[in-house]
Figure 1 (tube, rainbow, N blue to C red):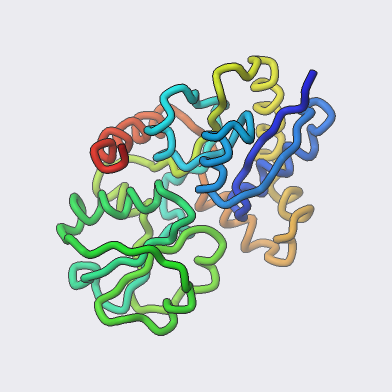
Figure 2 (cartoon, rainbow, N blue to C red):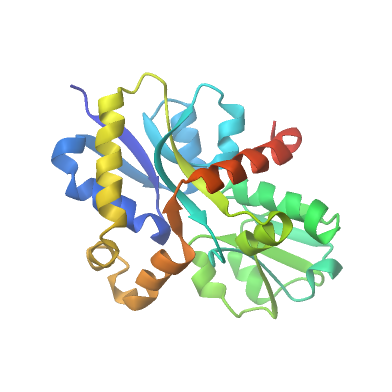
Length: 251
C-alpha cells in the first residue's frame, strides 16, 4: 500500500501530533512534511498531500474535503499564540497588518473588527515582523505561531483572539483541523487517529524529543493550558458558527 502524504503545521502547537506520528511511524506508513498553516492548506488543495492540518477557513473553498480525526488545534481559553498587538487601544486602530501564514486568523480578525470592536481598519499584509518593535501610529499587528513568543510585551496593548471570540460568542475556537481527500481509506484515517492519540497523551515526552526541548516547562504549559486538542461537540458547533459568519468574506 502506498505511503500517505501528510502535512502538519511547523509550530510548537503541533509538537504532540508530530511526536505521535513519529512514534507510530511503522503503523502509519506516511511521509510527513511540516509547513506554515497556509501552505498546509495549499498542499492539500493541490493534492500534494493526502491529509493535512489546515486552517479551518480553508474548508470553505474546498467542499470535497472532509474533517477527519477527533483532534484539532483549538482553545477553550486564551490561546496565547494568535494575538493582535498594538501601541494604542484597538478602538483607536486605523490599520491592522495581518500575518499571512493563516487565513483563519485573518478572517477571525476581520470578524472581530466588525462584531466585537466595531471598527473598520485598513488591512494589509505583514511581511516585516521587525516593524512590531517600531510600530506606525495607530497600527496594530496580527501575529500567529511561534513568533508571538518573540514579541510578547513588545507593545502596550495585546488582544488574544481566542479570548476575544469567546467574549463575543461564549464558545471555544478551532484554528485548525485535520482534513483529507475523500479517497483516503478509513483504515489509514484510523492509523492517524491512533498516532495523534499517543502524541496528545505524552506531552512532556513530545517536548523533550522536539526542537523545543530547551523551553521545557514553558512549552508543556502552553500545550496543556493554552491549546485544546479535542474536537468535541462544543468546538464543532463553534466551528460551524465561525464558518457561517466568514462565508461571505472568504468565498
